[in-house]
Amino acid sequence: MAHTTLIEQKFRDPFITAKGETRGSVDWRGLKTLWLNTGTLCNIECRNCYIKSSPTNDDLVYLTLGDVVPFLDEIDELAEGAKEIGITGGEPFMCPDILAIMEEVLARGHTLLVLTNAMRPMMRPKIREGLLALNERYGDRITMRVSMDHHSQPLHDAERGTGSFEIAGEGLAWLAENGFSVAIAGRQDLAESEDEARLGYGALIERLGLRIDPADTKALVLFPEMIEGDSPPEITTACWGILDVDPGDMMCASQRMVIRRKGAGRATVTACTLLAYSPEFELGDTLAAATEDPVQLNHPWCATFCVLGGASCSA
Image (cartoon, rainbow, N blue to C red; front, side, top):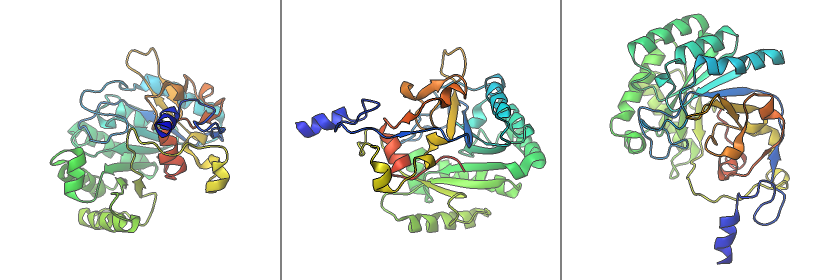
């Protein structure tokens, strides 16, 4: 009973762990990546989607160009030069303003990392035409990162639905044929080693004719599996030394994400890409407000994905 009670008390107090230790936190180190979440609507519903995207989930509504511009203005005011702007969802190519948002980001000189499933929304004629035009003008600053849940069709389709592996492969091949810089975001199956996963993705990359080195950890990103309801260890201030991990390497030290909740009057900023549904990680409606205070690592995914998993969504 005591063990159960301890588990139930984990990740509750923002400053103290269930064992009474001081919770780890992360100070702001300066902007590296600003993420734009274009909304949680998606053309598919993945079994383990961390943000619960689906054809019916509009808890996060589509961002408009008007939502995005004030945050880009704030970056300009920093006078620190070009930043990485990441675009995620949902499926970004369902967002009506996606091409206009991409154009605005690139016209200001930033680099662009677009996360997509490379399926039907991206392959619509209007979107393809717009992407080709953007790639012709700004191709050296655009990376299209395509999510593939596994390098084999059975495991990928089990997560994303029958036929999704083949359709995503068609999208990846189209991107490669048209000269886009392409990366893959995959998950490492729990039954295989990282070397085995990279070997499997390497065979897929070769089959699709992609210019990706499977050993390149930025071009083939393998994310740790996150399971809702999991109970990893809580991160304390002592963990940085014990694990030999620098808090400055955590996403929330240099990244923020812009979202707009359904019914909200304006877009707001969250601490990272993973925690859009946790109100304590919604930090303000400007970048300035969202970077004033340390981020308390009071969520299981802070441990699983970032501190213990060593992962980051940025390039």
